[in-house]
Structure formats: structure tokens, C-alpha cells
Image 1 (cartoon, rainbow, N blue to C red):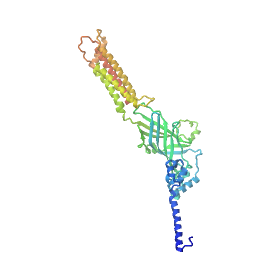
Image 2 (image 1 turned 30 degrees about the vertical axis):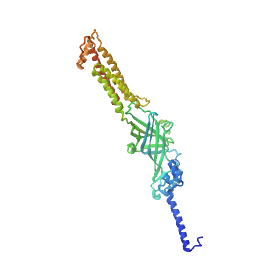
Image 3 (image 1 turned 135 degrees about the vertical axis):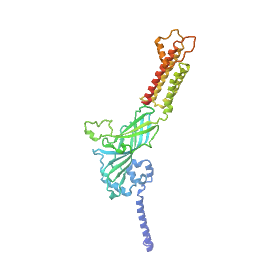
Image 4 (image 1 turned 120 degrees about the vertical axis):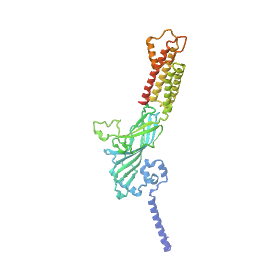
Amino acid sequence: PIHSLPLSMSTLLKLSLLSTCLFVKISSEVQGCEDADPKCGEWATQGECTTNAVWMMANCRKSCRSCQGGEKAWKLRSFIASNYKNETNDNQTKRVNIESVRLNMVDINEERQTAKVSGRMVMSWNDTGVAWDKDRWGLSWLNFYWVQIWSPQVIQINGASTGGGSVTSKVLAANSTGQIYLWADFTFTSPFQFEYGDYPNDYQQICYKFDDKRLFSVHFTVAPEVKNKEREELTGTHVSGWIVDDLTLNESPLSSISLSDWRRNPFDVQSTNGEMCIGLRRNSVYFFSEMFLPALLASMFTLSAVFFRLSRTQSLLLSFSVVCQLLSLLLISQRLPSYTAHTPDILKFAGFNMVMTALLFISSLILERLSSTPSDIPPPHSVSNIVGLVHTVLPLPKSKDSEVPLPWAPFSHALNHLIFIVATLAYLIAFFYCFVF
């Protein structure tokens, strides 16, 4: 017993017990940011801080990093929660402003014709039920981790039937005036019909429509800084095979008031409350070397065959051009998507090149045979006049000295020149139509 000890020893022991109690009390206050359960760290890594925020933020403060403001912040949260009225069931339309948007990843699946985009957006709205006196509480900002406070439940309304979009709220904070900010990570997935008319220099614009889970209960607006691209971040976006060229957020005037306006159709499934559109341009670094250059060289082989003037070399050069085009078509077919509703321009030009080369090859064989065929019947006088006119513009080859008369040789050479002139004009028109205009 303590009373049986000497006075000095009893006094020292009492002081020691008192200091121990004070130390324990002070330690408990200091350790207010500790976890109440040793498994808190494991639960936090599994995402329980977001899915079970009410319990986790109160009992796993260190693992969930919910120690902002200390005990003063927790008292303020309890004070606000005791007086807060959740207005989820009222008929008023909330106005939520989108403050900034950042894209992190874009995943394009052309085989399934789907486009997936992930990123983060910051939304803000005003709620007077969350305002407090910062001089009294000594806090100007406060994070919220419970579900009692009103916040928009954003969903995607034009997603695929399976594996649609998702929006996960990461941080919910407010200042003393009642202005609330929500940092939300979003993942939108939408089916999209790609247009391959300009492939591989095609430009695709994909739009994702989103709304609140309680339709028409929230009217989304876009901040001016987002409209003029000041608060849009695209530089760090990861996308394979594409370049993110543009990001646009559109707002809609439709709200719950449209239910009472007979001139509007609030039940239109195509109506949009909020819309995010991204512009993608294909990163076709291989286009010139693997598609355009082979088509251009094959065209040059085809048109240059005219300089060999119905010789055997002309036919061989045209046949070589056909072989080159077949090889280039194999390369193009490997790059093209498996199916498309639009014919790419490069494929149109390749088909035109193949048809023209085949026609020139057949005409060269016929004219070569005609020029070397002996005949005792000369061509008509009108045909001779046309041959003379062509000879003044494009000199024809001199006829070889032969014992057998070849009266149709000049006409064959003149017609060969005219056919290649028409083919050259057709190539120019096709080139400008497919690649310029």
C-alpha cells in the first residue's frame, strides 16, 4: 500500500502516476490520427476509403488520410451533419458547374467499334447548408467523406449495354462560404461508327453524354475557362495510334422545367444534359512510305510507258506496274480495318490505278498488234488527217524500212499517244479528288 511507504516515496509515486495519466491523455490526443484497426492499411489499398467512406474515414484516419484539420475538423463535420438537410428528394434543379477536365487515357478498339476515355473532372456547386464561420472554427477548407451531404451522381447515358461508363468521386471539399468542389475520376465507354473516308488521315469526333442519376435534377454548366481551353489538359493523354486534337464540353438548357413546357420533349432519349466530345486524328506516320509512295510510283510506271511507243518494253512496264500495285494492295489491306461503311480515298485511288493500268495494258497489246499487221488497205483519209495533226503536236516514230507495208502503224502510234494523254488527265483528276480536295 502506498500509505505504508515513507512520505517522500509516497509523494514521488503519486507524481509518477499523475504524469503517466497526463502522458496517456496527451498521447491519445496526439494519436487522434491513428488507425483503430491494424487491418486499416490493407482495407485502404482495396479502395474501402471510397466505397465505405463513413466508417473508414472515422476509424482508419491515418490510412485514409482523413486527418485534415484534426479534431477541430471532426467537430465541425459533426456540427454540420447535425444541422444539414439533404435535399435529394426536393423538386429543385441543382446547378453544377464543370471547372476543369483532364484526360488521362483514350482506348480505341476499331474491331469492336468502341471508344473508351478516362480522366478527371472538377465540379462545383453552392450549398448554404455547409457554410460555417471560419473565424469561429479556425478552418477555411474542409473535406467531406460521408454520403449525407448532397453531391451529383454522374452517369453516362449513351454508353454500351455492357461495360458502360463509371464516375467515382475521389475528393469532396468545401470552403466556409458553402462552395463545394468535387474531384471525380470518370471512365466513359461508347460505341462509335468510325468513318474511314479519309483513312489514314481520318478525323473522328466521339461524344459522351452524361447526366445525373436522378434525371433532370441537375443542370450541368461549363465554366468559361473550360470553354476557352484554359482548364483543359490533353498533353499527358495516353493513346495508341491516335492524337487527341480537341476536347469540348457542351451544356444543355434542358432542365426539370422542360417537363411543364409543351414545346419541348423531355422524354426524348436523344436529349443531352452534359456532353463531352473529343476529336481524334489518326497518327499515320507510315502513310507516306507504306501507302502513298507505292501508289505514286506505280502511277509513274504506268504513265511513263508511253515513251516506249508500242514496243515490247511498254507492255512489260505496264505489267510490272500491275504487279507492284498488287503488292501495295496487300500492304494496304493489312492496315485497313476489317470492315467499314466508307471506302477510304487511298483505296479508291488504288482501284482507279489498277483499272487504268489494266486498260492501258490491253490497249497497248491491241495497238502493238495493229501496228505490226501488214495490210494492202490504207486507212481512210480522215484518219490520216488525224494522224497528221497528232504528228505536229507529238512527233510519231518513223516507220522502219520493211518490205511488207504497215499502213496502220502511224494510226496505232497516234492513238496510243491520245490514249495516254487522256489517261494522264484522268490521273490528275483522280489525284486531286482523292488527296487534295
